[in-house]
Length: 160
Image 1 (tube, rainbow, N blue to C red):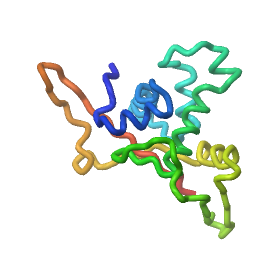
Image 2 (tube, rainbow, N blue to C red):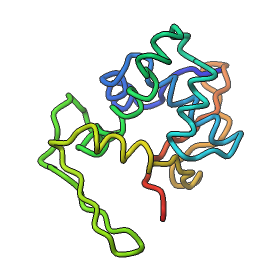
Image 3 (cartoon, rainbow, N blue to C red):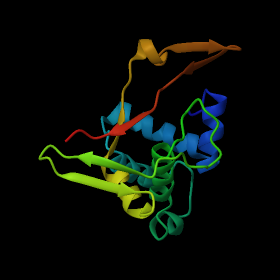
Image 4 (tube, helix red, strand yellow):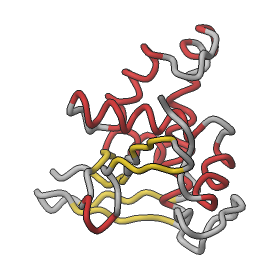
């Protein structure tokens, strides 16, 4: 059962995306670990089926609620949001990204074309498993007589 985001600053940063973003991304992380799905767009489809936030079907299907929230997080991360640094919605000085494909094709995404960039990130991002030793997660911990199992969320671009 989901409890909360362990880090206070990261919890606040996720709340800037949505007050229940921690629960949604925790569920995505759980699915990654249990089902082996790592692609963000595929995890979002699973989240839509499970509907952990108990959102109305109309909001999910007609408005694309879960896709929108995931894209907002990906954009915020690309534009400067970091887990341990307070985020207030202000973008960094980054105005775009250049990616080079394995075939040498250059892809350019600019902040001015927000939706195109959001779609690129959504289709090309994945959750990653970090080192349990380095990132200090994956262990059963006891706090005030209650046991907790921490999971870690890392997001990266898919390798081509």
